[in-house]
Length: 568
Image 1: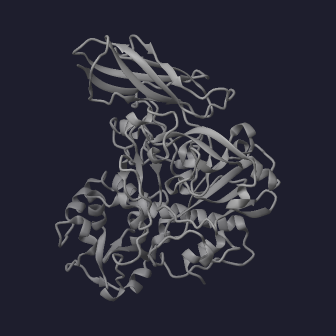
Image 2: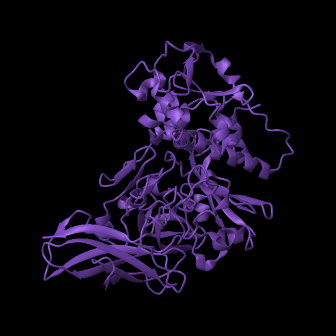
Image 3: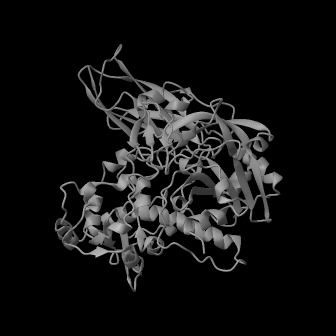
């Protein structure tokens, strides 16, 4: 019998001792649900073990993040729940501290009492701070209830250290409405003085505008994107899901496992650099880029990204196809390549994603294991020492801090592959969504964005014209062939000049964005709404409004870009 977190790590890396890992996170010393886990007989297959690991991954995210987000969405629709939430009795005016305050109107429970409530039959209890909460009535309504059960009878504190975006007044008020008691003083383990998983975060350029600090997610001012065809490393948007790992390059290894032929091998950093070095210029775009505009239609749970959650860079490294061929892999149309990062949650479960094997094995797909960005070693925020670059594909598949590659008949079971980064009908809500019904996003749709001028800006015309600048990009390697702009509601259009584009790459291999400029005739005193739309070489265009493509996760947002300005 082993502690769950230690067992999980050992099962994912059976050849490595837990103490030899090269990732140094100062995780909280807590057990999840119970102190032990019976993993069954030693004859269990590796695929079964991986399945359990994927369950942990989903659970970690559900427990720490979407559990209470979904709880808010679901429960606040119930009028009786709204009334119940108003009846919360808290000894403090600050709801952010309610879970640390003694409720004298409620009984005291020992941890051994709470651990007994870990099933629907006995009731499902969790603790947060010194609060004890009964979530029995909620769990059956949750689409991932089996995963939520992994936290039953224990503390959710470690997950809330990671998913701090849920420490809001609304979430905490609702959580407090489930409170049934106080944790016995002898069983309280303060988290304030324990190791902070965010203590080793890298320094960032102050010009980056943070959507969240922990995990760090930020974008530069849009106007700076059009200053350079290659986005400077320090100004490239940052999208992290977990704390940034600290990696010892001397001990770094990339594990490659091929379930199709049973081969496995660990590559040190210098081993990878023995393969031929290639450079690919490619834009990387977050699946939620421009979500803030979609939020104007109706609310969405997610980061309010502007148009700058994208960047264009030269990535250097080794072709994934070369590494896989060295492992005896042959391409097919049904298998997948799973990627796991060295960024982990409190159960030591990594961030993960996957792409089709056919993309990975296609020499024209240009998938690389990158160790340089714009001629410099990757910095920590962008995946040091190695990340995968999958040109033309949504940013979430470009896994950073790469620690493991698995060639499998199965798609990644990671939460971020199965229950996120998928799009649905505008009429699908959290009551009706079925994540299994939609494929994971791979290639991104054609899009454009106006980066200068900014919305609300007063601009001066020169010789009767204003200058508008922006970027355009299409996923899947499609070339942007045109960008149109209108200031009269689409009655007339001006075709922009494509100033900086990637040339001589061949059809289907245009991985970079295009920067464009347009001169638009105007009159002084005019108030204008400028529209932009891009067209790629398959003649795919952008939809006119976000209303028609709104989706509950706010992804693949590629409607016309719209900026309102006043001409001086």
